[in-house]
Image (tube, one colour):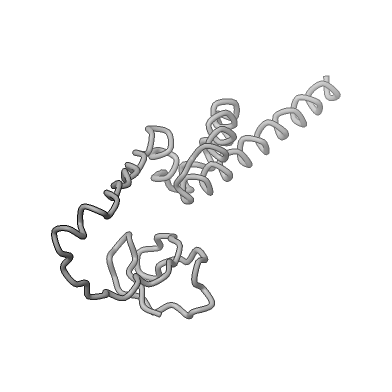
Length: 140
């Protein structure tokens, strides 16, 4: 099956068993869901004037607007791991808040993954800080 990556618009060949599943583009790394191919085009015949009046009017569906990514979602998504890990270790409380909220509210899969990493680093930092404080208490 042929599909197009929504991230870089490159043409990709995907096996049929991946239909309806999330795949990663090998060129740009964008993760997207492989959809069904569009239905075939069918020719229609014009309808006479008197037949048109008996047909019910069709209602147009409103298109959902794509939600714009918020500031924190863009920031967490676009930040490299080399910055996320030190941020989680040095500023654990803000990192824990942003990461834990982001894991459940971010739409972008890359932002969700980075939020998990940020939360894990913050948790490690908090645990290490507690262990160091305990060691310091016993040393004194």
